[in-house]
Length: 391
Figure 1 (cartoon, rainbow, N blue to C red):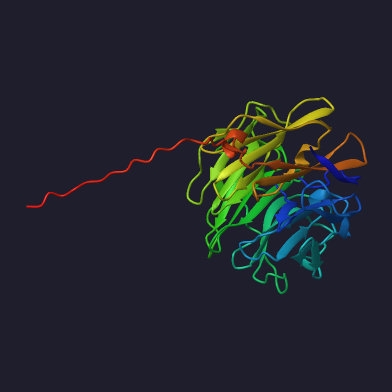
Figure 2: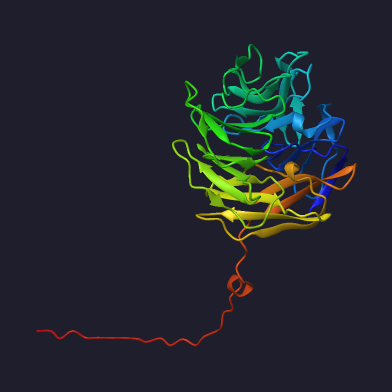
């Protein structure tokens, strides 16, 4: 059963897909969210009993922040990037060192200075296997929104951040349209970014960095319009991407390094406009999560598992009050057969910050197999003898 780990006055407390704020690090779940005043985190070993809220910095909206943990580079460090969808706020980076259920943070670093005519909205951050940092965000003015990319070879964020202002040619010229991008570190210095505009009927794109240069921009959705928010899970050099089309059904597409997989319908259960995803990197199985589409105050959160194909739609949580669906935020990968998810719920402020553990452990065998009965049996011994005839 889900538990309430805290409260918040912000309905976007754990951000908007495809941002990430939920992790399993060592023996602990870490849930990052804003309580409406500060960004902070709580930790739990079992998903039931939680620590007090540890504030990190001022933050009034969950989608101002993306949190990244990339054990392929380091199992010690965790990172966040902070950007506001309003002018005159800087774009901020910070690194912390995890020890048990606590984090020691270094000083914040400014990626881009505040500007009276610019904002840096909906940021996400990735770490390459070299430790190099990549940040994408929507840089906006009064007449233009564009997806931009910043990078820094220093893992602590020190030194110069380089700006690639021409990273995307598909998002520009629309003063009313923001961009939601996701950047992920892959293997062997490779990096991949995906993005779409914050409107119904937008396209999904990707661009890959092969270790030396960014390759050409590509359409992921092949002229099929997606419906607002999407989710991304990384497995090696593959990205599993989930989203809704205009029919408001959840779909999946596997983005391998060299090709796109076929479009796969996950379920015939309608969603509001968003779906998110986690992956088991040990066996390649993906797990999609979404809230049902209805006007009722009592909501159901569903999930489905993909092995070779997507399985049956299953109920994860039933009877949740007013789930804020873009805030459903799972751990990016399955750890110890478990996925942890957080989300915000309730009709009005204060909202409840909720958490649930999906346990994917194999079912134990029936008890008669675990404890077979042994019966005493009678045994018979047969003796044999022989002789050899001598010549």
